[in-house]
Length: 370
Image 1: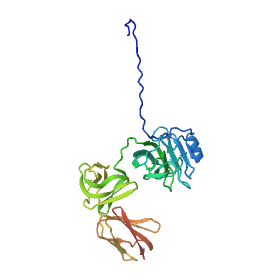
Image 2 (image 1 turned 90 degrees about the vertical axis):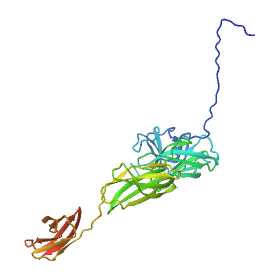
Image 3 (image 1 turned 90 degrees about the horizontal axis):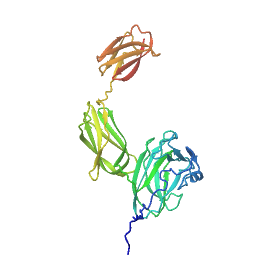
Image 4 (image 1 turned 30 degrees about the vertical axis):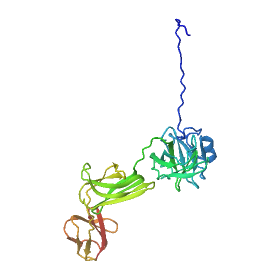
């Protein structure tokens, strides 16, 4: 039995808790754990293995790079360091160690960032990811990316079913060009998979129609594109549909021709629609008033000429220039008639060139003065 006293007792209760860590994670997914010098270029596999922690190089290229943000080929996407792979005589490649083996048959997600080199050897090469049970071996391929964008870091996100109980993720490229940069590998992290990765969207006037072209680097669940038109860049209407590729990791090109809006300022955008009805919009591109290309013609007679040279044309608002063989302008005039007669009686005997200019286009013919 405890007796009360005037003393005050303090009890410190220490509660031990355990936090369950993720079963698998990259041990050095951002390449920050290394002993490389600043901008360590063209390293042999053995050098990489000495300097880069939790990674084993095995590619035949023997030109791996460990780069810093301060390097000419920087900056990094995350932290200070990133890696670069070449494809000289055989692709550079390396494996990255996970904290624990994957569980075969289990679905995982992975993300990383890539960009193509622009300072040395563009355009870069698609990155290939594999799962291996052995360090320094390619294992089973689970992802092949699109061609990296030059000088721009882009996040690649994908899911895969573990083909084995590998603890090593292999990274290589497809070739045959050079230098792809990679950084910030994350397993089972937050990653927004874009429905499409739009490489470009263009609109050009081709005769009296507007041709809209675009290309995607990747597509996820992409049902179709709705091509939308506007005269002011604000209020759009649908003018056509183009089926998407569904799911794709390779460059896919598309084209749509608008025959209905000749002679008006035109703006276009894409509405991308998923199979589950979700949609997103592209940026807006514009085309100046598209006019039909007019192939004008002109004739000259008589040829050779004595006193007068007659010129006929099917074009209006033309400009005429006559030069000698050395380019000196002998005659110049603006005309708006279908036939023009030019007094050449004072021209010296010999060869001359007649240029007719219409709407920025030029045609040239030659005649002889007797």
